[in-house]
Amino acid sequence: MNQAHLLPVPDRIEAESLDHAVELFFEKEWTDGLPIVPPTEERVREMLAGVPDRDPEEVIGTVPPRWAEATVQICAVNAVMAGCLPKYMPVVLAVVEAALDPAFNLGGIQATTHVASPMIVISGPACAELGINAAYNVFGQGFRANATIGRALRLIMTNVGGGRPGEADLSQFGHPGKFSFCIAENDAASPWEPYRVEKGFDPEDTIVALFSAEGPHSVTNHVSTDTFGIGQSIASCMSSLGSNNAYGMGEVVVVVGPEHVAFFATEKWSKDDLRLYLYQKARNPIGKLMFERRYGSFYNRMWPKWFDRKRDSEEVPVVVRPDDIHIFVAGGPAGRFSMVVPGWGGLGGRSVIKKVRMSPR
Image (spheres, rainbow, N blue to C red):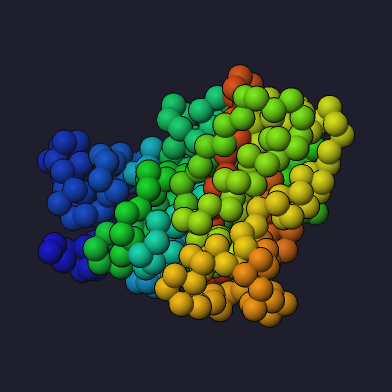
């Protein structure tokens, strides 16, 4: 195994050419498996110009499990490598601040055998200013801001935190979101107050919310003509026995597509109405969770005490409380689809929200 990346990294590395620099980063395992943009001094200075009010030596925090310091400048280096534009830097720093909040438990995410990866959801007017996609293909390719902001976090987790596959990162499978997992809330398509307002921020603010998440699971329903059928489809996806949430609870992200949310708007369902509906319907009986006691009786220690474990018919919700269901509207206008993004479960820490400190113009 190549141990070069464990040695102190010099401030400057000489490369004969662009191609040589790219290959050198592969050799040192300073990349995510894709080619990087070489972080020359000029490029790093340009990136730092995106946050002129931040001291390059400011320490955002230490990144587990290596516990090396992530300074503003080091974040800028990795943002260059990811292909970010300087104007993305305020968002990148807010994302790093959220990831390094102790409540998020990034150390656990870096080391778990589960597929969990940080999922970034950005809410606010800066999304339009920066070109962060909230519509067509919101979880997919094609948009520089989404791709590179998420990738910058992953490179920081790798290069500063040491989260390399087979070493600190022991995920059995991973998922494509471990390259980049960044979406935006689609305010224009939503009949509800934005997530940032729901969480106590002003409409003019831009925030980042970070979740420990599996890959997104598609919810298709082209048949129902009311809210109950669509809600039932979402709840069914949420309560899959293969999901960590079925046993470990934790948090769930639900991304409602514009065609689906139109039914909720027509029938005047609030976001809380949908949240409470899903809390009631996304459940499994304890007997089913124990495979009808085929393997004996067992109980998950994450389940609250108020579950009656003596009744096989006792219904266990996939989250402890309704507020653990986080609802966003996003995606393109065509297609009766929504998405469920299961979480890591109760061991996975909590979601974290940080306000983006937009740089003065």
